[in-house]
View 1: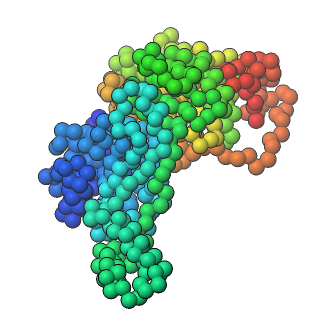
View 2 (view 1 turned 90 degrees about the vertical axis):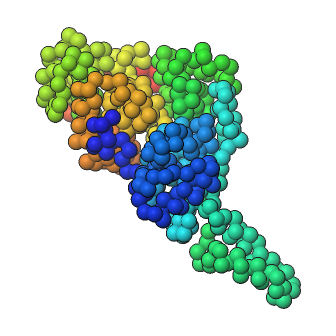
View 3 (view 1 turned 180 degrees about the horizontal axis):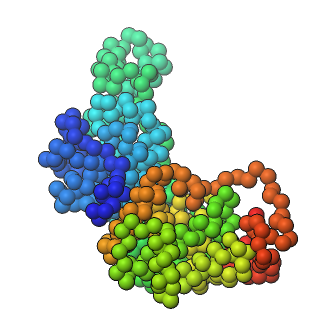
Length: 462
């Protein structure tokens, strides 16, 4: 993983903990949660407070995530909201933690100025012994407080204040006033600096989990289903009608269509479709060339085109399908019939505009694993697992490509690939003698042919 670490593609954006004050607070919170402590004086933490260095020291990569359920967290600063989540077991965990920090930024800023905040993502499931247990995961509640119990103390103080305001003789109750003063010494002015934490409950209907080889649970859609990365037969009985694995390509395609979860990239507004397809083709060429021992160090797109010609007879069906679609996009050539059984099919999709777009793009990245950029952006765990098995030549190429092409403009790249811009007006129909991207010799595919393409129905060209 050295190429990734050197370029900040792995363990990047972590928060450095190197001050004695922060280390002391971290240890206090760690002991509070787990009974353990670290002897390190300099380490890094992710959004949940997990540190890979501390994990190595303790010999436990799940010291804040016992059994991969009910992740615990330690907050030293609200800046952790920008950090990644390492060793994620559920796709929703980072989003929940980030939203919790942002929703309570002012309160957490005040709390972490004096102490660490320790907490847990709590649900009714404390261990997942079978896939059926995952269906018991409904709402997650965030429980958090400082190690000194400031939030709990503030809640008690608010109760005393309410008594003081409502009870008839509270002005003469010296014991009540004394208790209020003593608690206020611990919490500070809760009227000016409130320490009540909001938005502590989150629904978890659709999510991915690394348990049982990797599962996607879609419960909050019109047609619910479970999609397994490994053989579905090993999952046993599940409380849902439809269970698919990655071998059920047609069924997964139909599932995405029926729930309107994905769209063809050729329909994407504002996206240079031909350039995107050629980039995906380059990734396939890099995979083939690396298997034949080619040195990909510093390989440019021109170099990959040359390698593509050299290994033209070795390029797989993924490349052939993408090339046919690229010819149609650029030249108005014959419309390629790429159905769900074609290896290139899922490379031609992206998530449509809905709340679970990130989850669907995550699924699509696993179904199109040669697209290394989408795999890295959408599914870090699957990317790192795949990276470990690549040749050194491909590892170097991928790390260099992501550093040059993605790191320089992460937000822009994500927006271009997966964003959804609302159209300002309905675009006019294309000229009769033109393809969908301007002039071309072919009139493009006939309506009857389009109707037959893919399980989603017609491809409406804008």
